[in-house]
Length: 337
Ligand SMILES: [Fe+2]
Image (cartoon, rainbow, N blue to C red; front, side, top):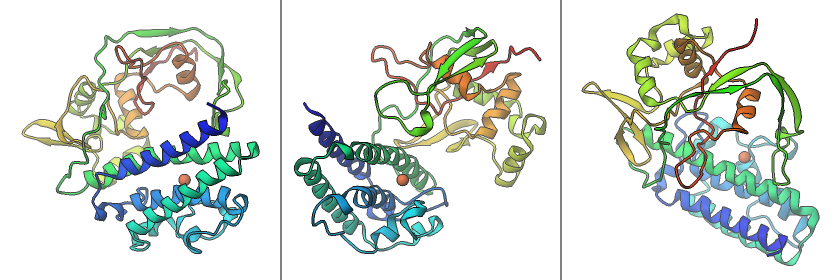
């Protein structure tokens, strides 16, 4: 398969996958914005489409006509150079365009993008095409995150659908991995796509440290809660303590206690907490406090990256899939003061 076919397939698969993620939604789910940080699914669908129209179709596909003259205003996110846009806080106020119109917009842009790639192929477009595709993949993660927030904060706790491995199971035996003091290389080194903030590859010197071979589990987190972790001011950053107080935080997001039992909202519905599963949905403030409680600290970005080159946290038996990177790790600090 040549590069043109590869990119066309990747583009079409990515477009299809985004729409598949939205399939379990009801029309009403597409529109709400319960907090500023959560964008309505309809907006994600339109915004990822606008990117291709704005940066590829307009100006590169001969005779291309924009689907709607005002969609650039509606679906631009923060690209200052492109012009004005609906402010982020108002995304949930957009009852129009309708969900059906947004899907028509997607079909229009997907069709014309396929024409651009097939009939007007130009290798100079590859970098923007790659960014557009990976931009949409990033929004797929955001979509799932935002859909979970929308459904998980609804009093009816609606079930999104059967999604595999939402909570990663981690049941291996923990040990401390020794990382000697030396120069390590960090940053993206392969020919594959990466964002500019992953480059350049460069060297960093790290003092010796030990890092856990396994991820922090929900069972450990319950111990932290039972030991008063959320009410011990000494464990928290000032700002974190403020956040805990103002928002009455007493457990990870989506957790709730019923009959002395911890449960959580998952995309598959309400479920009990599996103590051996890795903790998810905790903020930096919570991770910091947890590390303080353990008498340890969080790894720096470079410590994490250096260690992950040698070890695969939470690698699943058999299929070699790595754990998502949002899970917490705790490092023993061996740095000499
Ligand atoms: Fe975006």
